[in-house]
Image (cartoon, rainbow, N blue to C red):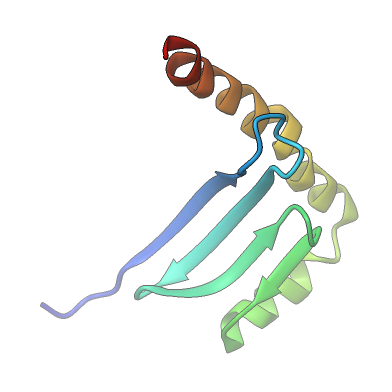
Length: 92
């Protein structure tokens, strides 16, 4: 089966109950290799392949867009983690 596999994954990663270490990750992969990734702690896109480096270079020029991606921690990650955690943690 010849073909290509491309996908984008959004993740919220944390390990503390107060969400102080919450990190938003956006990863774009091609054929199971991560090309480029945004990390809210780093605050910019980082390329891991030749194409990913070019994409990151262009994406990092737009400061307003980077700020929007960083804001996903407060806008998406923390509210969803609170909902998910309350469904599990508060039921024990």
